[in-house]
Image (tube, rainbow, N blue to C red; front, side, top):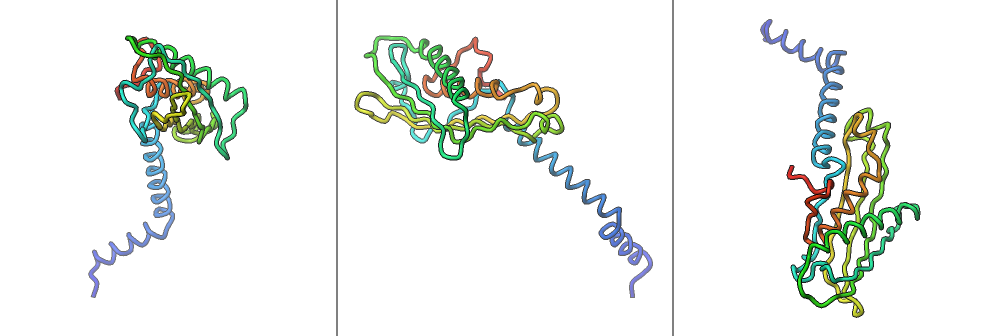
Amino acid sequence: MMRAPEKAGVLGLSLITNGKIGRSLLNALNKAMLALCLEISVLCAGCAGTAPKATFTRNLAVDQRLHAADTPEIKITASDGVFMLDVEKERLLQQVQSGVKTLQALNTGTVEPRSLRVDITMTRYEKGNAFARAMIAGLGQMHIDANVAVYQMPDNTSLTEFKVAKTFAWGGIYGTATHIEDIEKAFAHGVAVALTGQEDKNDKNKPSKT
């Protein structure tokens, strides 16, 4: 036979599980878990100016990095299912070209000039939603992902392949005031760093240590 304290415990558990208190508690827990997951995604994504680190399928040897004497031909294309306006492709291309030119100039020395082809294939380009970011961090995220392949011309000798992915998920005023153009700059810098092995110490988009 169940004693009075045990009955009270069962009754309380039943009220929490089945009643309004239970539903409210479960809703609060669900919201807390969602907020935690979004917060983790924000921390992993980093701020707008943090350059993403490339993930190499095949590492680029030190002596194969873009040198000051090299002439790279950089092209950007969008893979199937990725929508980018021509003006967006051109803007991003200019950002990458500028970043590469700045950083490859730091690789000096006596080497034979090379002609290189750099193919950047966009696999994700999402501008996100500023209103959603204003409501809560983690929503309305912006994403720029790409596969990069480098070839030495005129023989099309493959030198390296790598992936670069930039995500922005901050909310509030900062999230609202940040635009896809800001994310493009950080993405382009990440590509330039991967191609040259250099970091421009004066570049505001230098990857943070955090």
